[in-house]
Length: 82
Image 1 (cartoon, rainbow, N blue to C red):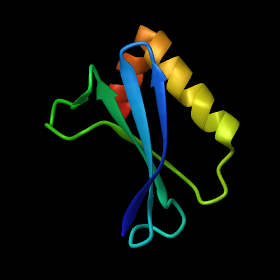
Image 2 (spheres, rainbow, N blue to C red):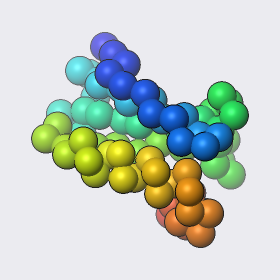
Image 3 (cartoon, rainbow, N blue to C red):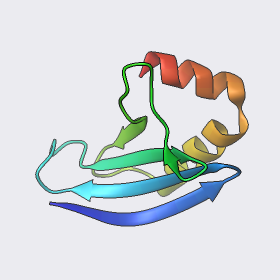
Image 4 (cartoon, rainbow, N blue to C red):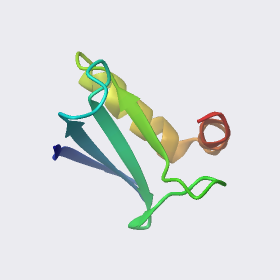
């Protein structure tokens, strides 16, 4: 079961945090990334996301979202590597 647990908005990017009780028990949190309210997709047509462990630090999550939204080089590198 997936439950939305938070939303963050920076510039044209929205980040939606979900908790998944049926997923990987070590990484139950996923941040789904949207640009201009549309899912941000990679070259394989999969939505860009970042997974977080069960004991993640909220500051780390916020820093990731801010950096992703504000730093084009970081964003492009992240999208290629993930």
